Length: 383
Ligand SMILES: NC(=O)c1ccc[n+]([C@@H]2O[C@H](COP(=O)([O-])OP(=O)(O)OC[C@H]3O[C@@H](n4cnc5c(N)ncnc54)[C@H](O)[C@@H]3O)[C@@H](O)[C@H]2O)c1
Ligand SMILES: O=P(O)(O)OC[C@@H](O)[C@@H](O)[C@H](O)[C@H](O)CO
Image (cartoon, rainbow, N blue to C red; front, side, top):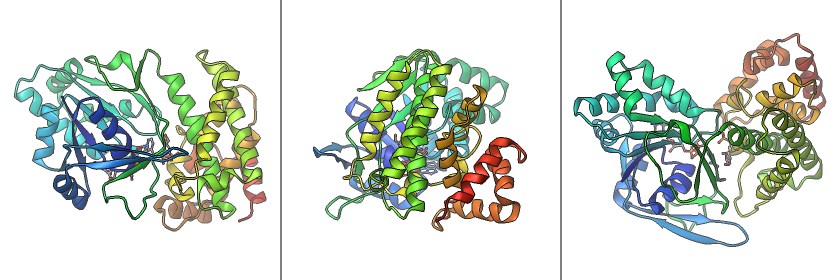
């Protein structure tokens, strides 16, 4: 069994590559960084360091690398049993082009064995997004072939994989926390999957929303408030009592909205889940930077992501989530110069004002009472 995984970054190597290797897959990585691909082919393996109060190491062996836009990569698509991605949702377009070429090649060669594809990105229904992009590139006959043989399954993936490395780690080594969760939507798989530790679920949306809002939404609030107060890492930020109280309150607000929408979890279960997330943020061994967790603020503030979707869910049921709004205001103040989207967002704020930026980035009308509230909080926050 072979998996082609797009994106040999933190989560690609530290989570997806490791789990699939342990489940018996031969792992091939596709990436856009030449040095990384070269190193994967030279070293053929790496270690994953699992850091917490207990420390352990697991090895991944027999790996290879291919460049994204290469004929070799299209061949790997054609001969893979499984394809996964962790490239960042904004980079799925480049992957879609190669997948379309690969599917064309599968069809030409008469391949009749199914292929499952999963986009392991932090976004709502990223695999549906990828499928849409691939289908746009196929003709009618190819689309029919894809519908028959390619399973596009949405997933929720969870494991914190920071940028932190120590000097005794190899250049390909990855760092992760011990906890992980991988939920896969059953209905869109074309063939059974056996991945150690992954759960195949009938209804993915409650799991996906729970993870994206209560973990990633809370993570973002921690990062943006932490950045404003000069904290460098997530564990440092969450140990700040003022930040902790806003993050916990924001989780409560989002959980309330979630519980109204899904009967999969009770409010108490969501509360317990939220508490476990906070404990994970406290992991000081990960040294997870607030600038990594806050990266791409315009993506995180977009209408279908971790902050604005739960905000609008609360508004729909007549609630105005004060703490979440504070987190959103803090996100708008993220001006880290090492982040292209932060720089662009600050340009928009300078040119259009905060309300104009909320309209452009978050999709909330400029003259809405929600925007007014965000602007008030923005003005209250001082760096
Ligand atoms: N790090 C985490 O804790 C974590 C956990 C769960 C999910 N995720 C999600 O996984 C994705 C990757 O995150 P990460 O932290 O590993 O980022 P990362 O920057 O460490 O890795 C991304 C990798 O993708 C490569 N890449 C970019 N565009 C590509 C393309 N078109 N084709 C192939 N490779 C490409 C980059 O060169 C890089 O090696 C994101 O969507 C993120 O939200 C991250
Ligand atoms: O990867 P992003 O930029 O969407 O979000 C940053 C973090 O919240 C994220 O990477 C978490 O560490 C991860 O989702 C944990 O499962």
